[in-house]
Image 1 (cartoon, one colour):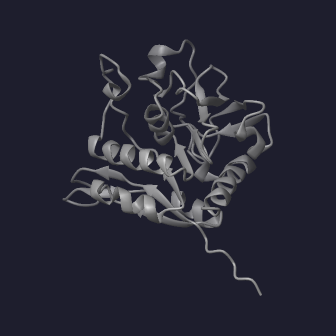
Image 2 (cartoon, rainbow, N blue to C red; image 1 turned 90 degrees about the vertical axis):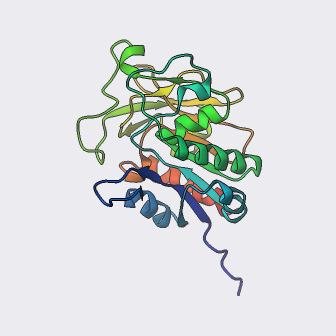
Length: 242
């Protein structure tokens, strides 16, 4: 009898909050379905405190990395912007940690998956830029901060033919849930856009030089479509090969 390969260990980045609400001291946060989506797809989720000194060890241990979203923005200085839009708020310690672990995982060619703000940071780490505030930059933009619940679709995206994302989801379009005011502006060198909203906003990127390097602007951890499930399954399957 052959032994079954162990389930891959998947790191998930945490959000950080200031004192108030849950605790009178600084605290971490992560929606449960980020972890349950990994478990249901065959992986073992491991949340990652923002400890810069632990990055090398995390990279050594992990089979894959998910950079999650959050209610904050990438510092425009990181992609060469001279001014910061009034709507931009940053969490510098979180971004510093996520930048370091993304660089480490990419250097090790281990699978990385960016979700919402994680996709934006992935594009910047790879050398791309961002739109700082969609309503000011995109004429007749959709409501990318959708008013309906996040476990429902807010709009559709068109999947780029020939992209790895297209091969994974097996569909020309997907219904997606949307919760962002920033987006990819210039796709990073060597990377490609793999999904676009009806208003032209870039909703996904991928980089073919890595084993698995995909970012999406929506929240597939809610599994609102079979495409979302397929995307998680493909990521976990690649991580299992580590």
